[in-house]
Image (cartoon, rainbow, N blue to C red; front, side):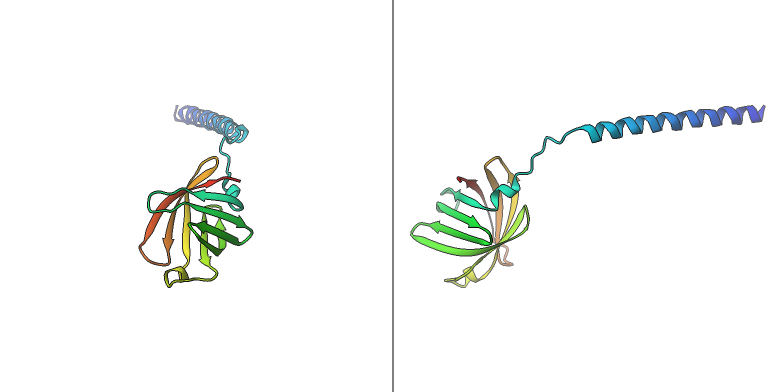
Length: 140
């Protein structure tokens, strides 16, 4: 009688394992066969012409990026900065010819949200606690 119970228990366990295996395979195939709807367009912002609109402690700024150089035009000022990308969502800007002590510190920019032709960012200057949020729009 005990052996018969053991055999039935073993058969039930084997059936459960087989069902679990089949369900796992189907789930895996479902995940693998699905196409991702997410489109990573963060590379779109590494080169081109951009604009930060006036408002929220920003003056209107036009930005031209090519390779490792960024030219920033705001008001009657034009500055050239080096840009170094750590990844698609984080880069560092440094003035090539700083005019003030503040401009000697690097700016660390974190891209927080990517939209079709813009991104929201947070900038920190040097290692201070100063932090500013804004939006950059790609115009070309």
